[in-house]
Image (cartoon, rainbow, N blue to C red; front, side, top):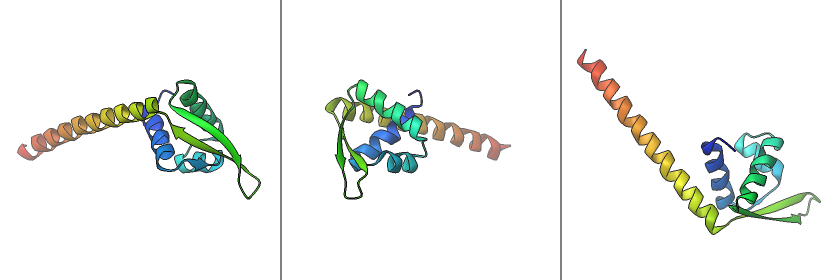
Length: 103
């Protein structure tokens, strides 16, 4: 998974609510099922999440996704990097606005 924003959004979803069908999770994130499956597999292989299956009352297989301590650390780092990038962008926009106002 190359896009850190997608990675961060997926980790946030998992931390906020652990029970999902893959279709629900894909729909909420705007991912195709293929992309979601790829991302979940990568998260699991890197040790960021644990996945358990269960059947719900609608006879659909759902999953319980749990962030591991390593996953929580990764989510925190991604959030920090995201905030730093946004602050840099905000500062740059303020400078551009100030320059345009002076002209």
